[in-house]
Image 1 (cartoon, rainbow, N blue to C red):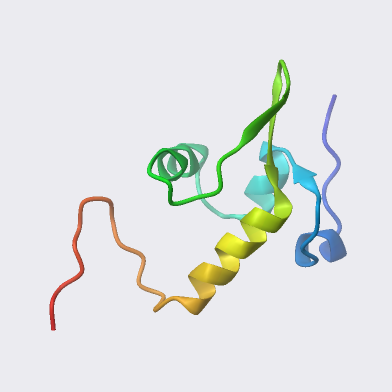
Image 2 (cartoon, rainbow, N blue to C red):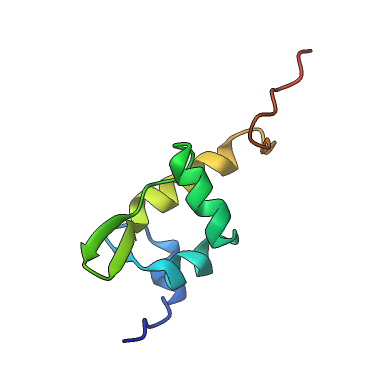
Length: 86
């Protein structure tokens, strides 16, 4: 089974929509490994199992994460790096 691409409206409208990995990667330009590592550190919404072979993310949670990133200082830090004191 293949997933259909999300429409622009779906990608831009938060709601109770579940998205699969290919759809997540359309929305968030990070590698699968980076997303996985960020999930483990609690820095990205966690996926959950919807069937024995499928995991999904809540689109509203992903949209909230994006909004939080946009509202932050824009300075993403590498894991283990501390913010420089002023």
